[in-house]
Amino acid sequence: MFAHHLKLPGRSHFFHLRAFRSSWEGPALWNSSCLSGLPPWPQQFHPSRYLSVNFRPPYHFHHSRWRTAWPNSSFTRFRQAPAIYLSCGHMDRCDNGPPFKRRKSNDEIQRRWEDFSQHYQQNEGANIFTADGKETKSFDFSVMSYNILSQDLLEDNSHLYRHCSQPILNWNHRFPNILKEFKQHNPDILCLQEVQEDHYKKQIKPSLESLGYHCEYKMRTGRKPDGCVIGFKQSKFSLVSCHPVEFYRHGIPLLDRDNVGLVLLLRPAAPGCSAPCLCVANTHLLYNPRRGDIKLTQLAMLLAEISKVSDQEDGSYCPIIFCGDFNSVPGSPLYSFIREGKLEYEGLPIGKISGQEQNPRGQRILSVPIWPKSLGISNYCQYEMSPEAKPVLDEGGISGLCVREEENFTPEKKLQSSIEHKFRLTSVYSHFLTKGGTPEITTCHSRTALTVDYVFYSAAKNDISVQPGSGPIPDGRLQLLARLCLLCEKDLWTINGLPNEHNSSDHLPLLARFRLRC
Image (cartoon, rainbow, N blue to C red; front, side, top):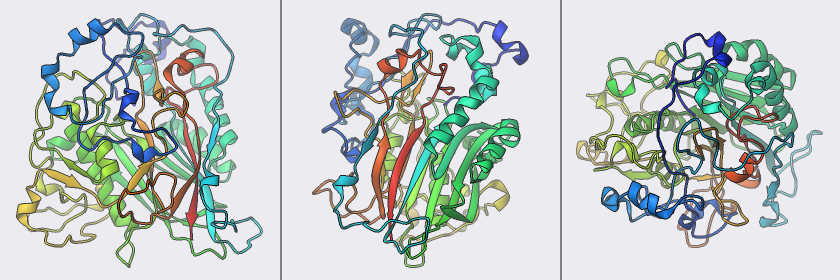
């Protein structure tokens, strides 16, 4: 979720040091009023434009304090979207306890599956792929996305884990718990973030290979020792191609960060089923809440690679699964861009892009265009070949240029203050619990609790997320069969937050089951 924003000397003496104290406070996640309906319809929740700041405080905050902290005059531009708010997990001081009463408990997190399979007609997908190779009409598989918390980052940011006892933060305690989750859920596709290189080579990769996975890894650039992994069960998929993406670009100040992405093209192992290939993408975008311009550019670069990899001969795209830690909250402009496919960004403060902070330092406005032409990516988030564009080399992580020229693509359109992409993506999670409408949480530590992790997918026309009257929808061929429910912040603090005795990351794993229509 975060970068190296606090360095402590002597990492080997981590447990004997105290991070410096600073006085701060901040608000919380999102208000349930932004949801026009309840799950299981994830597509109902996403604002049409920008991030609303018609905030309603969590129940344990005094209203007058919020009125003082957030004057209305600062947010006049963002009142047209539904309301959200940031994490109520923030504390008045970083050395205070969390807002909810903790209990020392050995209880494990109880998460239930939410099943949507009865939504689909009984005759659809009646013949499912089986191990004996019988003829099938569809292909079922599961996906997990999980930020497992790099040990180096944990030790460099010890102030985030003051609520934890020292032994549970040791990697020798954490890794068996993480491996246990892999075995318990047994996903067919595994997208991991914050995977430390030495742990990957010595422990994670051998363990996953023993469970039948093939793994691809992309480490962050520079001196960052962690990266992203995509693993898949070799009994379910075969690898067609692998495409690492580096967001760092020498000579482009906007892209001086070391985040990366990874895109795989997989062929389903489904005898008798003419299932298309599946494009699986995984990323961990920049943490810095004040640099939304960088986050949007990183996202555009990865979307361009997804566009190239998923492009089919008939002009359509193969089904897409897009996972990761996006360091952006539901309803933020970045989230809405992924869901809606378009963002009008002129006049938008860069500190509002991700919605992580309600009162970000600095209000610099996004420039038009956001990224330079030399990057070679159009406003449609596709690779372009133009006289002004410089070649982009494979060695930088970009696999090529010029996947598809847009019709009537003129120089004037390049200067429009909007960006677009051609995918119709929806979220596996609706970001509010079905019962009570309480905000879901994907990450929780001593300073915050909010949602930043997502599994997006290209939905079939009759998918559970598609609502009547929502307009023409491309058939993405993927149906959401089930999802492992998330928890609210209060429930997480009853088991001492994250990490804890049994859950060894400050993120929860996201898990979904899909049906790929042949």
